[in-house]
Length: 100
Image: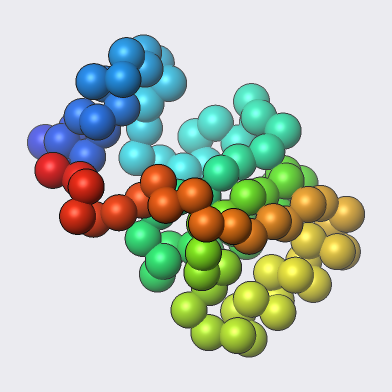
């Protein structure tokens, strides 16, 4: 793991999350979970949500669901097609001002 990636995971380490559960590769655990919570920078929401929905996982994504309405519409259609839950909310877990 690159030093930058390792540094990104430091807050999780401080919470006591085991190294075996840490990664910067979002899809690494897809086959081990039923659902995911996307709390990443907004510009990554569309691609991550699409990846997990396509893999048949339920998704809770922090606001905004996407940066443009057409992407949000595509995610909603994909969730319906795959019969998965796509929920949007504001839990404010990703906050660049709190990281570091």
